[in-house]
Length: 75
Image 1: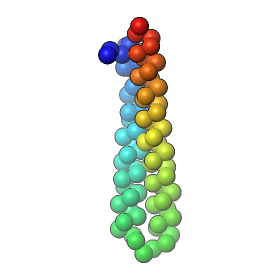
Image 2: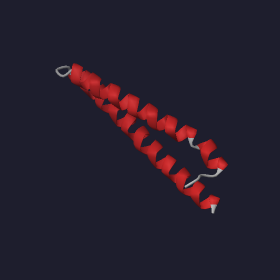
Image 3: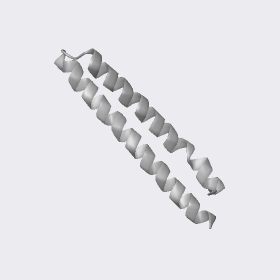
Image 4: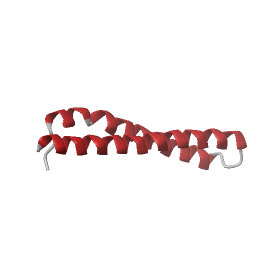
């Protein structure tokens, strides 16, 4: 299973978005755990976790799309 050269070139950005989303989501999760009794911090951490989760899932779907198109263009 080999990707086309264009697909390999464009695969860096979705992987970066996926990694950044995972780091933001993990940081928000830790922030939520450490500030368990402060309601304002919980709202902020929850919103940040939602943004991180959306970036993580969006990056994975974007990478999957690039891999599928790269495999199709290789044939």
